Structure formats: C-alpha cells, structure tokens
Image (cartoon, rainbow, N blue to C red; front, side):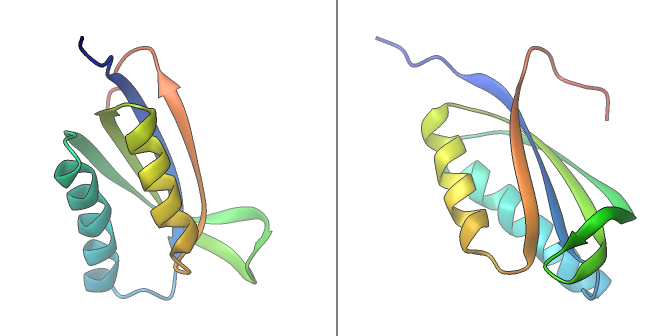
Length: 102
C-alpha cells in the first residue's frame, strides 16, 4: 500500500523587523523542516508588502511562498509549527493541481 502524495503551497507572512539574515534563517528553517519530514520544496521570497488590515499590530509583512510535496500528515506538522512561531503573522495552505511557475 502506497500513500498518495499531493502538491501543497503555503504562503506565510513574517514580521518586517527581521534583518535579511534572520529572514533567510526563518526561510531555511521551514524549508529544512519540510525536507526532514520527507518532502522536496521550492521557496520564493516575494518581498515586503503592505497588509490590507493590521495583523498582530503590523501594517506590512514579508511574504514567503513555499511549494512542497507531502500528505495531510506533513501539512498538519507544518501548520502546528507555524502556529507556535510568534514571528509568523499569518499562514495558509492550499492544495495545488499543478506546480506554479516561480
């Protein structure tokens, strides 16, 4: 019996007070987290953008897009980790039909 793997995309917003090095470390942390749990990833830093509304007292955020291969178990692990991370302002995961151009 084989487990079906799907393609997921997570967009997460990170505090803008981060230095470039600290932001890169945060991106690497979540990339490594997915890879250690058996996934392969594509990550894109979409840069800093203004928010439509205030989130955790912030008016702008760094937008990070990560596409990865996994199952519901991995999605739940990543979501749990991001829920615990105070530096992640918001995040949401979508299941993709095909890999987007990045």
